[in-house]
Amino acid sequence: MFKGPVENKNEAAMSELVPEPRQKPVVPMKPMGINASLLGYIGIDTIIEQMRKKTMKTGFDFNIMVVGQSGLGKSTLVNTLFKSQVSRKSSGWNREEKIPKTVEIKAIGHVIEEGGVKMKLTVIDTPGFGDQINNENCWEPIEKYINEQYEKFLKEEVNIARKKRIPDTRVHCCLYFISPTGHSLRPLDLEFMKHLSKVVNIIPVIAKADTMTLEEKTEFKQRVRKELEVNGIEFYPQKEFDEDLEDKTENDKIRQESMPFAVVGSDKEYQVNGKRVLGRKTPWGIIEVENLSHCEFALLRDFVIRTHLQDLKEVTHNIHYETYRAKRLNDNGGLPPMTVETEENHESNL
Image (cartoon, rainbow, N blue to C red; front, side, top):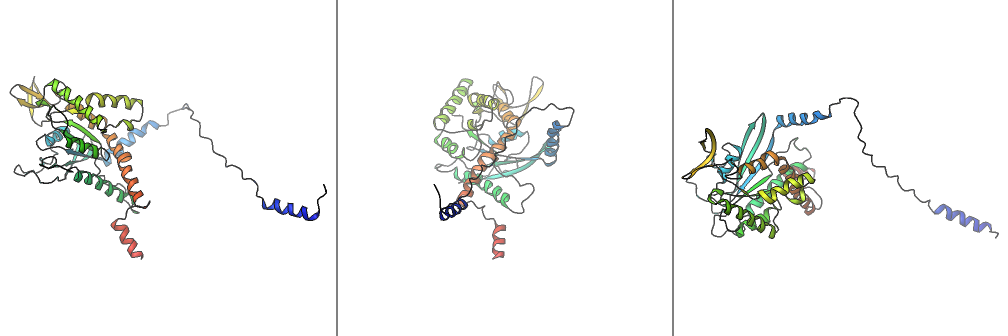
């Protein structure tokens, strides 16, 4: 059919107005994992040695909190754990000091060194916890302290001119001392762990396990595990944070067999079979602290220091701190929290 000049002009104008379809962007292919065989030594394996040297120079921080009623041997156990006088009571505590009417938070810092590796250890004690007639909400000062350390780290992190190495005062581990009643957990135990397990790594321990028979100890451990499970309380190592099958297998064994650790602490040495051992003297003999047939202190020490110390720090940073940080920034409309320094700069600009 013949089209007039007007129609041809309209079609040409329309073709000019209609944009050409955009081509889809080319998605780069993921690099294929090929195990290349090296033709010679290049030194990749030295990265571990480089990291070791760096750590030995700078040292590292580890902050451990102890929570429980008075008289459960918290200070003694911490001293035994690190084989040095690091507890609050070992650092100028007065025996005439009265139990505080409210929960207090007292942190004592030490630098301990072993094999050329320096560790800045901070022991945070909570005198007054669970010692009152009315213990309602007595975990709140502890939760507040833990969150304050996250806030302090966050404010340092968002500074424009921040420090090369931010001081880490965040609580990496909380040892919660359970009274060796042999019956069940107290409502206070359940409430504390229910609230605090969301913000810190809790490791439950049964204190003064030498006051129970082996059968009582086994039954009590099973009962505690059952009560924690029924109440939905997650303790460290949490199932959801297992990274691979090896971690899951190792941690399942700890969760199902070792937790809660039934421990005895002592910083006194006695002679047993020609050897000096840490122990507690009773009319029936010496209870050896590091003897697995007597108590599970050695398992707790290996767990906290020799196998999971770095993981405790990583879970604190990647899970608990990140949860706090995300909530804090979200509450602040996506903006970093205002520090004194940023407030002063903002006012000077105005």
